[in-house]
Image (cartoon, rainbow, N blue to C red; front, top):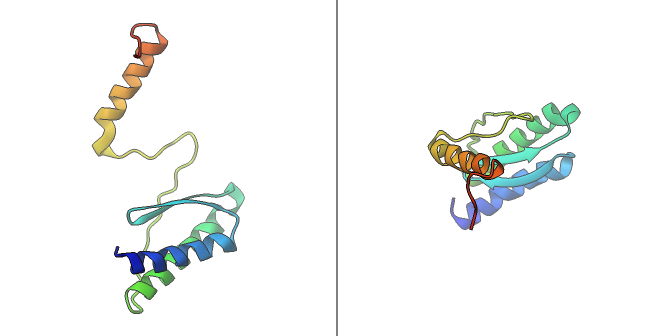
Length: 105
C-alpha cells in the first residue's frame, strides 16, 4: 500500500484501538494482529472490522472491503504452512539442546 494510503488505513484502525481496550500489536501485510481480554473480544473484533472498513473506504474512494477473522486462543498459535519445515527444524534443535545432544555455538 503506498505511503499516503497506508497512513490513512493505519489511522482508521488506530481509531478503533483507542475506542476499546485491546492492545494493538501491528499491521501484518493486509491484516491486523490484536489482543483483547476474552470478555471484550467479540466487541473489539467488531470495532476493528468497522475501522478497517472505514479505512478501506478512505483509501478506495468510498469502497469498503470485507474482512474476515481468524481467532487464535492460547495455547494455539498462528502457523504458516510455508514455514513448517523451518519450525520443525528449530523445535528439533531445541529438543536436542535440552537433551544435551548438541551444543549451540
